[in-house]
Structure formats: structure tokens, C-alpha cells
Amino acid sequence: MSATWTISVNGRSYGPYSEAEMRAFAAEGRLAPHSLVARAGEDRYQAASEDGDLANLFRPAPERPTFFTAEGDASPQNFGRKDEEAPAERTHYVIVADMKSRSISGLEEEIFNFGPAYPIMPQAWVVSSEMPITAVRNALVQKLGKLDTLFVVDATHNKAAWFNFGPEVDSRIRRIWQKVHDQSATQRAAG
Image 1 (cartoon, helix red, strand yellow):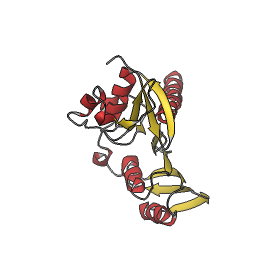
Image 2 (cartoon, rainbow, N blue to C red):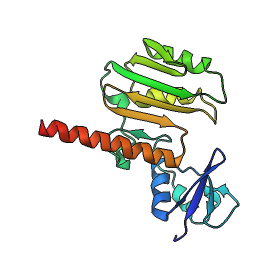
Image 3 (cartoon, rainbow, N blue to C red):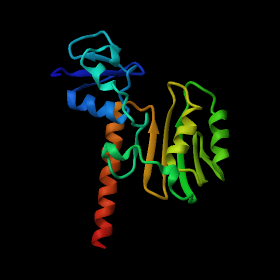
Image 4 (cartoon, rainbow, N blue to C red):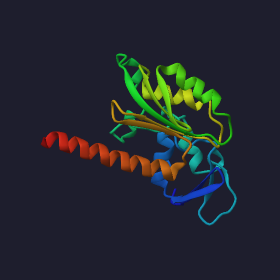
């Protein structure tokens, strides 16, 4: 594979991305067999599983979550960590959604099921829950449409999880979150 590809997400094109980047996206679950891709210089998008070179990235299916979670360590092997096995602890979340394709009432109802919650502005809530961030995100994603986006911040553990922003935004958020986490760790070690 020596080609480059662009990825189409919600009608917007991102890229071009190299072989290494496409492999990383597939390993992280950000590139799925149904993701629309086109080789550089081509205008026709097709499912990634239909591209001769990219199809191999999905055999066997990677054991990675479908959604990205920034947990201070960007290495892919940590994405599948089972937060559910950790002892329950009260966690403070900030949840922000941009609902474009569905009613917000189903999402808000799910948020209030997590524990004490308060809407701080339209489509933004503070929540206290014993659920881990991955469970919160996964439950909320079920209430989203294909045009809706979600961002969840675990203020207690310095974690974030998001959905439906596209590969380029995912990458930027991860870089910023990782830098903030790295700086915090350096400051704690120095202090």
C-alpha cells in the first residue's frame, strides 16, 4: 500500500491520509468497513471494505471500541481497557451535545438516568454518576442520529470521550488532550 486516501464524513472530505494513518484509524475504530474513502486523485467514494488495500485492515475485525476515548495515554492497546471492572466511584461529568437530526428529549432523559444532573445551558449538562465514561458515552450514543455530535468530560479523572466529529477533529482533540495531560503529569512530578 503506497497510496493515500481521503475520507468522507457527513459530506465533508478529510485527508489525504497515508497508509500508516489509515491503519491507525482502523486500529482505533475510527475507520470502519463502511467508511467512505477515495484514493487520492479520485472523486468516487466507496466503502473502505471495497478498496483492495484497505479491505485487509478489517480482517479479522479489530477488537477496538468504535468510539475514541482520551485517557491520557494515546496508545491503542489501552483503548479496550474495561472501566466497568473498576470499583464504582462518584464521577463528575460535563456532557455537551449538538443535536441536529433527533429530538433532545431522549438524550436528556438518558442523562437524568445516570444520577443527579443539571442542564447548564441548551444541550449541556453537569452530571454526577457512578458509571464509567465509556458506559456514559455508549448509552448516550444510542440516542444520537447520524448528524449529532457528543462530547463528554470526566472532570474527576481527567478523561474525555466523544462521538461523530470525524477523523480530523478526533486527531486534533486527542493531540490537545494529550498535551494537557502530559503537562499536568510534568507539573505534578515537579511539585
